[in-house]
Image (cartoon, rainbow, N blue to C red; front, side, top):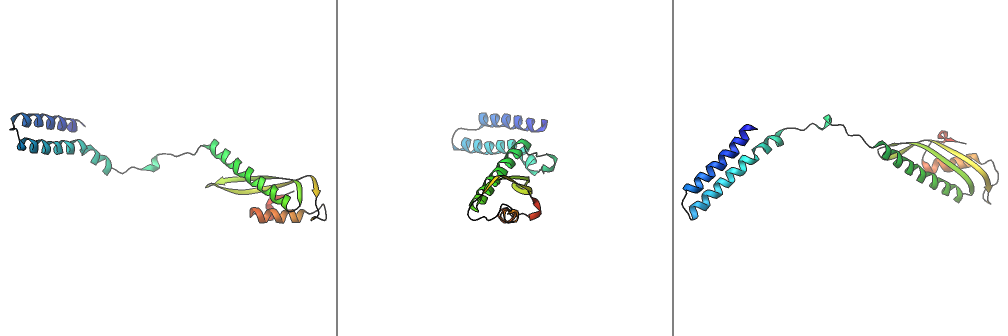
Length: 153
């Protein structure tokens, strides 16, 4: 660092001396241009050393904000639950609640459990029996692309 500072001071001093000694006219302009380039090279010499060094990014730890990730997971799960309830209502099952548990990895939800909660289940014309657990299970498994073993009543 000291050498670089001395180089900058030396080039500035040398430039001033040449400016005082050199004649006026085109030659003086040419000499000033040359010293300006030399001065820029001296100033930029530490940048070359910085650029040539390899930065190891593995030394730095990058942690995701766990609170943000939890909020994101809850929003995605809530959206899946609302969509599943709407799909069940389309299929004729009203007042059926759905609770989904999952893990957020790589911005995708991996569903671990789906709880089906009948809440005063009301059957419409398309359903013939109150015990249509298998049909509900099939709808959920198909819609959410999960195994039937994950679905719990």
